[in-house]
Length: 159
Image (cartoon, rainbow, N blue to C red; front, top):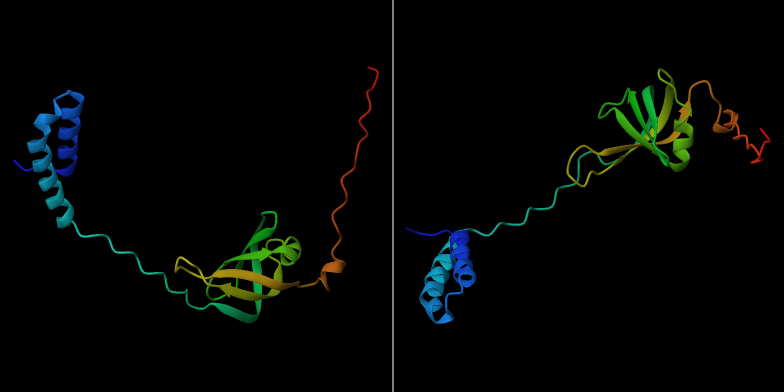
């Protein structure tokens, strides 16, 4: 009966744990070594996967007119779902472009430059929004800034 590699290892480990004198190991070790070598050379070595080719369509497109479906603020970036772009509907706006994307509301129409970044996994390219111009808003300076948070002094009240 042929043994597998794991069975050979378990057999040798059992000899050691049973405290069989090492003078009796020679024959068992040789037979297990032959079996393990035969198994090791029979299995083909796994080939390294080739690197993924760059995703198609990477580059920068001209101004696109889009309609916002939803916007999610994620700190340094905003994730925008929009319609009107042929190759995707999910976009990211980073840093200064995220400030403009935060002003988007569902149903708002806006124009933006779409930068398509290659996906290292070979899937669809990443779509980034740049130079966002919201319809009806002249510039980002015209958008009211968020009100500063009111600070309440930390005072013990005698109640």
